[in-house]
Length: 585
Image (cartoon, rainbow, N blue to C red; front, side, top):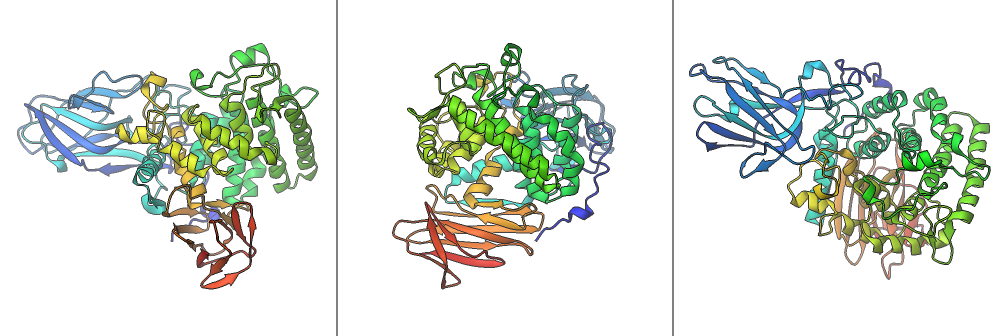
């Protein structure tokens, strides 16, 4: 069982990667190729199996070295060769190097001005120039190129442990989706902070928060998320909804670690992320024409907005504002700012009343895009539902409507859309969207040969997209949180919620790291629902099982226990700890 102690974490070096200095946050891992083939006279194609950010080392034989060789790095293949003119921001680089017999040589791609100058996040100089690639072509190599003569030096987070997390289900495609997304988080830690991909190598608030959620599902250490947070406090970006994401990041850190000392040190800065300077007399955030044109983002790229109609009161922007206020109230309470907690809570209640009165259409059961339009987009409804703003009696109908709309938003909005569906009884629809046929799902990425998630659903939706975008990896956190069903109920995972959302699956097993150690869950559904749970020491769990038709109660260790029905759930009345088998009959 893997553990880490917050008190043992050293935070002094966290910002090293942001300044180009060496840092303990990332390191190089030497990787052998999975295949080498001779594709033309004197030309070898080397396959490393998956894309990673790095460079290579070459060790020629002791004799036979004469002319310089050509090395080509690529993310894509075309006609069995490295694609030298890949689409959009897909990477290719070529370099000529001279070999010395018997001497190892580090071969790095040329510097790319697009992502190695301010304000891009600089990687430590000791790692050498990095780029994402899976394939390497070596032309002019003397003799045969053996596997022991070439290694990829891949940069990853130094705290990441590959087998700290796992997910296996009755759906093989869903397992492939999880594997793609989980690896995507590891592979995109190369910079020491969370960046948006290789094209810009910038930290953005929304990218960082989505990555943070998935990172915690694979690594419980907070250093990289905190380094990213600190960088974004220094270098904020422009979209309206990105500022409230900083509150989301701090809240997620607190729930993950329970560390109020870190929170207290960042609390005052968080208050600047609430869009208060844009709040009108009725408590809602206002948008000027300039902000409508360049500020309110809703979704990205623009054509993923489902026809959203922008007005001076934007439903999506206000949904983010309300969620940030609710979380700020809890954070203020956590650091002992009780009066401020009450102020944020009252501000949220007042604004939410206006939000419902002005933006919700009870006749349709839908939210308008804003004041002054009757258009009701996917986004104007998915964010209020994901943030718990929808009146309780309206949630099932709205969730069904969203499920019926399908994946009408980007890979970014998909995080919140699927959260809304999982949390409101539409888990089968959420899982179906992950593995849907067509070109707007993670199945499409898997079947297209992606090894890191893309920035958009397909090249045609964003022609300049890169192929290494962690914000496209939402299933890496959604599957552990909702299908395994494990989330923290109290800050620091002292008390967890175990609430599996099975959809159409018949079995799942997996594990995830927490600050208190490994948590594992397995469940099977046939005529009964059986769940096996192992909690680390110091953690208890509230357990809720999906109520199967005809079930009458819950048994733990073969004995009936007190449990009651709450909607679609059997809720155990007493928390559990240790290793337990629970069965619904």
